[in-house]
Image (tube, helix red, strand yellow):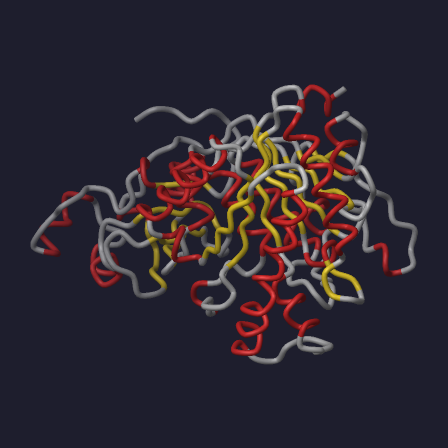
Length: 383
C-alpha cells in the first residue's frame, strides 16, 4: 500500500546502475544492459521520464586492456576510464536505438556542482534533454577527476543529481537484494529490510563498507546517499539490478528491495546544495545554547555561541557547525574569514566592529545560508 501510494505520484526518476550490476567476467555484461534498457524503454512509453547515472567505464576499460584486479594509481584509473567510457556509451546508444530513443552523455566532476552557476547550468541542460525525450546517461568524469574534485562514488553523484533534476524517485540498482539488518556475507542469517521510515543508528550500522572488485561504493555509501535524498523529500529504493523485470516490478508496486521514505520536513534545493554538495572548509564548535538556537529555533549563528574554530576558510566558504562532542549540527556559508572569527568568537555582535574595525554582518552564518544536519525535535520558530 505504501509503495503504490509513493509511486502514484512518480513521473521523473533517476536510475543509478552500479558497476557490480553492469559488469561480469567478460567486462560489460551486455545482456544485463539490454535487459535494463528494455525495461527503461517500456517505462518511457508509459510516460515516465528517466535519467541514468551509470558506472562501468573503468571496468570496461580494464577488460579491454586485459587488466585484472584493482588499478593502483590515479593515471591508470583515468586511462582505463578514457578507454571504457566511449564503449560504455556506444553500448547504451545502440541498446536504446533499437527503441528509437536517443541518449546524451554527460560527464561531471565535483567542481561542476560546487560552483552555483555551473550547478544551475547542469540542471538546465538536464531539463532540456528530458523535455526533448532524450535519456541523459551520466557518469563521473574519471579521466580528469582527482581526489579534490571526485564525488567519491556514483552513489553520491546520483544523490546530488536527484535533487538537481527535482526527481520524484531515486532507484539505486546494486548487486544485492537491498539493505539487510546485518552483513549477509558473514554467514549469519540476515533479514532484508523492506521499509525504512526514518534513519536510526540501527539502520546506519546495518550497512557495511564492503565493495566489489569493480565498484567503489558499498552498501554504506548507498544508505548515506538514500539519507541525503530523503532529506530533500524524495523517496529512494535500493534494489537488485540483475533481477529480470526489477524496474517493472518496482513500478507495479511489488515489494522489491528496500524503500526509504522521505522526511516530512525536507530541505529546499539550495539548502540541500549547501548541506550535501559543497565541501566544508572548516569547523565551528558551538556551545549548547547556540546548538539549541540553530536546531530547535531556526536562528542564525552569532559569534557569542562559537567556542573554537578549526581550519582555514574565507568569506562565502562552506563551514560545518559541530557541537562540543564534534557531532555535526549544521553547515552554512560563512560571512567572515577564519582569522576574523577567531577574534570575535564568544563576543556579542555589538563588539564585532570594535574588535575587527568593521562589521558587515551581525551573523557569522545567516539562517538563510544554513542547512541543518541534525533534525529538530519541534517545529522551528521564526525570528
